[in-house]
Length: 339
Ligand code: 13P
Ligand code: SF4
Image (cartoon, rainbow, N blue to C red; front, top):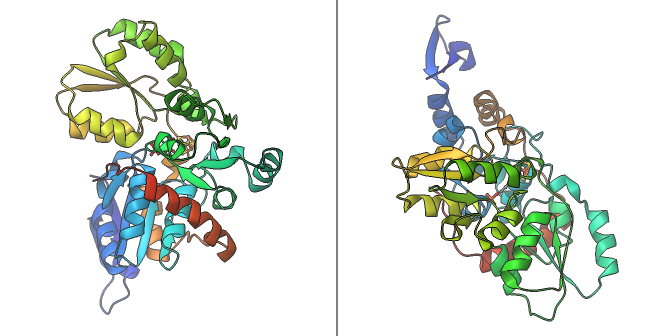
């Protein structure tokens, strides 16, 4: 276990300067108790950050915890839009992220002006925004969704109402297929990490390990082809699962296969390996690492708790409108897993 150098100067007291080595994990837990803070970590965080957190989960599960926690401070170890969502649901609480630099390439594919212009072209449409969007974009949406409830959210909208779905093209294609609706316009955004998990990678790994179960996040570049390949018999249809990160964990608990191929960000492997020690979980692309998620380090987490930074602040008019979209989602979405 790496240690964080805690010096007596850090805690001004009478007496000689002495240096004690304590683990950074103990320091995080001590500071969290002192600050009345709950620490939430997304499934893509570094394993050490996941292990020190109070709760680990997907974005929907963590939103739900943020909405119901008694703690006065929420420390969000994830990316910026996730911490903003926590602030929308708990506007009176202090919401911190260890660095505000932790953005999201998918959320950055659309801003509020672009969405307003798109809405003007489709005035009757209901706008469904994936949670991977800024609060300003959520404020322009009618309802939010995550990868674990996107299909339920779209199914809750009357069949004759056109839908604008944003910003992820692969999740949008997945939702179109699952709902059978042809009145869904999809924004052509993508996550650079998931788009980098290709159908060729998936096909090669399945060919090398034909008995493996296959777990695919719907944001992946390979998600559409995985469904198609399963349909034509090139992938085992009964062993190919298109799942959110929470869905992957639920499925992993029941697996008895020797191996499972995992098509998502590699941070996910940590929780999968924890919930099922019998199956070997292998990444479809071992380089699929989100550099924004990995910006959260032990040092920045300690700084966050000590210095109260970086704090999420949102304009009240954005909070009011964006919160409505998120609350509609939380009311519709089925419960997702978090520990
Ligand atoms: P989940 O909603 O499955 O947690 O995914 C969030 C995300 O950022 C995917 O890249
Ligand atoms: Fe955004 Fe992709 Fe990182 Fe998820 S994995 S936070 S979608 S950049």
